[in-house]
Image 1 (tube, rainbow, N blue to C red):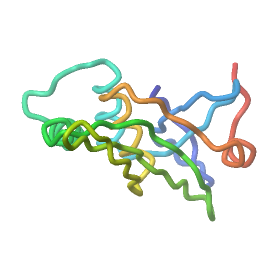
Image 2 (cartoon, helix red, strand yellow):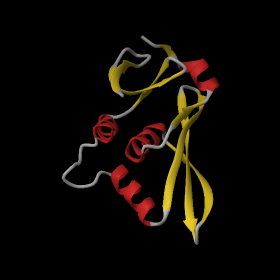
Image 3 (cartoon, rainbow, N blue to C red):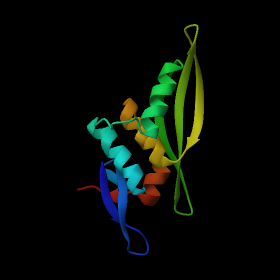
Image 4 (cartoon, rainbow, N blue to C red):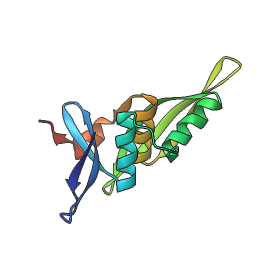
Length: 131
């Protein structure tokens, strides 16, 4: 979901709140990214496609599919993500992995209903107790 969190400086900013292992992982996002994720979760169309809508539609049109999103690393307070996808050619799948900003990866995942996986090491370092 989308919520708010405080940065190290105490500023209140939007955050994507991911739940795994009974813990929350807050990933700070911009207002635009928060709006894109919120719209994707609500399946709420915009009068014109947002960037994440366009990307999801293009990948599908080119014969591809998103398999999963992985939040797989945390370095110096920055989360890193990967998007695993497949492209189908003559009935054969070719797997591909793309580096992505976690906010973009989450926005894609909520539109394409692919799973979001969080590495245990990331949760160990940055997870917050669930309610």
